[in-house]
Length: 67
Ligand SMILES: [Zn+2]
Image (cartoon, rainbow, N blue to C red; front, side):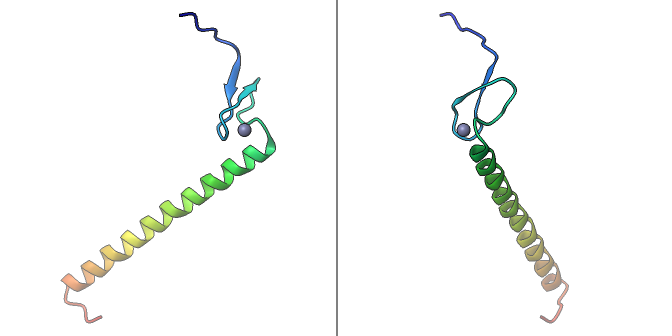
């Protein structure tokens, strides 16, 4: 099996071959990808914040803090 190593990448959003140094095939894909990343980041942040809040609540309850 012969595999040619051509200088191209695949679009990180839709997977199409992209010539040169570009990571995305179009501005649309770039924007979509950025939006997706931001959404993921927000979800992760929300997860951190909620687990932190739960941890604090558990600590307060274990200290007998009247809630
Ligand atoms: Zn694309």
